[in-house]
Length: 328
Image 1: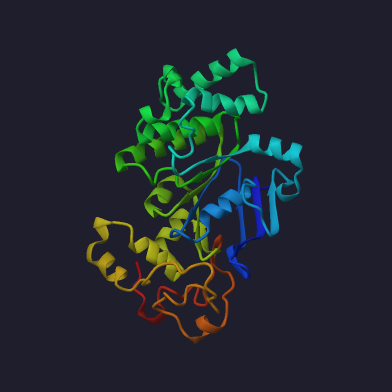
Image 2: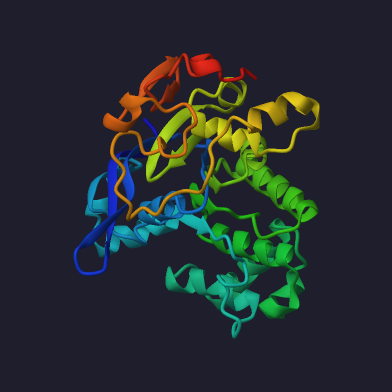
């Protein structure tokens, strides 16, 4: 049984007096214990909203979220309190997620105090151990967030997420605000922590190269929906949705050379439309260079391209050949 299982999740917001904005539209996914699942897509596609909804930071409109065989959306205050010891989040902006008026030691200890774990001396010892676990000196506990670099602040955020010994972490673009060299250090830290603690990650990102390094399985999200899902190796080798090809073409790859340049010339144009925009048929068809009449009229269903590989495209399974699309 999966550690986390989501079925047909819907999340909507009110925009103005009458208009409803559907940020997450019928998403289903599963994450096993110790597994790292990547969730990728352009900004505005609903990735962060989905992550926040899993942790009950944003209310769901319908659907189901089950964690360790519990219905998360039905949890009362006490059970929700216990659920949040098991499921935590690493935020994108490490500085914005820390209180500038608290030392980092106090920020981490606060989690332990809220959950009534240990006495003051035990909590402070726990903070020192957590800082050392993420590669920081234990005496840094007395410093304030502004005294650290971006990479060090993200290590503090990771330490705080680990404070309650969770088994599942939503990592919401945890390296996107960092320099490339620092990104590698943080990614290696997250990998090491996953192995040593058997952590499961839902790793949210827009950078496919990062997801390729971190995740064994990848979900591609567009306009609030999962449009493709596959093992990482399969998805990178045989993308079956035009939007996935768009994301792949944006990843620098010297080895692909001219072939990559030709592929980029055939990918989507424009940006993700506002979720308040009504789109009939396939949500990607306004940007898809291979759209046909059926794409404008009918919403595609998930099609199994190969075992474990699904694509929400009318031409799934033949997309690499459809209308001359360049095969990678």
